[in-house]
Image (cartoon, rainbow, N blue to C red; front, side):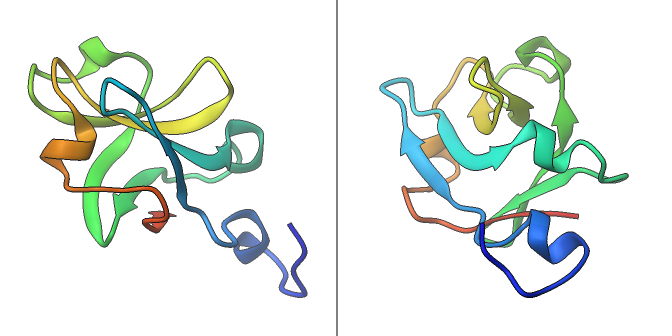
Length: 99
């Protein structure tokens, strides 16, 4: 991504939800390789916290949202045994941030 800034802003320039699956999971344009060096990885969508990056769906209770790295290597947001799009009221183009 082109940017004239230095530091973290290059890594996080314009992070967005780019795809909603048939299951209601949200895929972002954030590659794990670009965010793995950040110390804290609390994911926020539209200003609402989804929580810290998890390894698997079983790291949260049923019905709870989570952020994880999908098989594509991209950051994804999901709800265990549910649909993130519906539960979190998110859509393609919504902003994503990491703290």
